[in-house]
Amino acid sequence: MRGIVKQFPGVRALDGVDLEVRAGEVHCLLGQNGAGKSTLIKTLAGAHQPDEGTITLAGEEARLSTPITAIKLGISTIYQELDLVDGLSVADNVFLGHEKAKLGFTRTSDTHRATSALLDRLGHGEISPATEVGSLPPAGKQVVSMARALSHDARLIVMDEPSAALAHDEVGNLFRTIRELTRQGVAIIYISHRLEEIREIGDRVTVLKDGRTVAVGLDAKDTPTSKLVSLMTGRSVEHVFPPRPAPESFADRKVLLSVTELSSPGSFSDVSFEIRAGEILGLAGLVGSGRSEILEAVYGARSSAGTVVLDGRRVKGGPDRSVRLGMGFAPEERKAQALLLDQSVADNITLSALGRFSRWGWMDRGRAHREAQRQVDELDLRPADLNRAIRTLSGGNQQKAVLARWLLDERKLLLLDEPTRGVDIGARAELYTVIRRLADSGVAVLLVSSEVPEVLGLSDRVLVIREGRVIHSADAQDLDEHRVLDMIMEGSAL
Image (cartoon, rainbow, N blue to C red):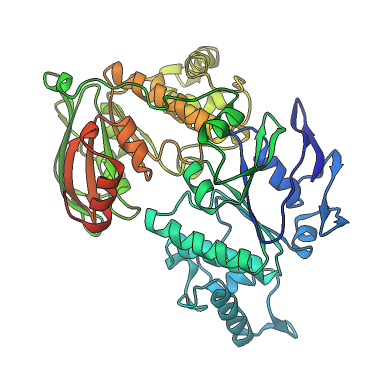
């Protein structure tokens, strides 16, 4: 790709971007949210048409007028939110849209044989073509998406945050599958905000910033992290996590949340803990260990037994009761569970506080917009356009909007599930500062993250969760990543 320019009304998303990918390599594409990565890969996928520039594939100029054109030329894209149909089988998903059929009838046996061959090629012959995709774990769904790409004879596969929904042990399987593809000459464009993954799986790196290429062909394994961060952000991010109070400072603070023997069949059992005012309690564990389910039960969004008390009042009933008592919840799937994507930034921020801005059934929109603007300014949400559809914001700014919603009303407790998923390193630092500032103001925070360094760096105390049980509790400063991983992988409290 040479000199790629793409303009939308009021914004120049790509301003002369260059990208060169070689056969059989893993080429990592880095950049902050809003740097132009998504626009670039959508241009490569045929979903956007460049205003200027050329795309050359295997030495010949390519006009990617539609996604179908790109697929026929061997370019497949696996987006962060997988486009699989859970109710269909693996084989039906792999050949969806180009079914093996004769006289209008699908040839099931041929489809299954071809799917088995593709899964064997990926090193995952244990997955049955007849299995319903919805029953597979996230790692299995990633494999099915790659098999679908290969069913189109893909020469280049774009992977957008492929490890975002994977547990620690599943990432290794993903990398083995990627290496198998590159050995066969398939090129991979790999997009991730996790710099440690770039080192492990990548060959070369291209960095985008503000719609421009700021570095091309960097060595993925030898380029210092400080240089990558500086290129992405235009500044050095030395201290990502803000300073936290000394553990002893919480001893005399008021207990805001008390959870006693909380259980949900099939998810977790006998979970008990307390969180004091201004304290951040982190839950560390693998995907499926019960961490997210604990947050849902505390919030009242999951059926459970046990006792939850917030600021001296028993929490019983659904989320509406929890909100009235002073809870706020930022779920992991913000697009599906937290945001109205086609509504404006202002509508999303004021969603949980409509009662504050209405009288006799009429909304005071002027006041609602003023309050929303105050939150936008305090959180430095960009762009600061209240009327903009929230789907057009980057991941980090969407997450800020979710937080702004709960900050509009004073919250006593915030439940944060994967608050930085899909968020770049610069925006992460900003979110960490916001979360710590909230805690310093007296808000209690219950945090879940798949990234152990994030849990340890942001939390004051940590509960280690394995198979639905708390196996260890300690001050965050007394733990390290290796020790926590040993506990959650092996199940022994050290």
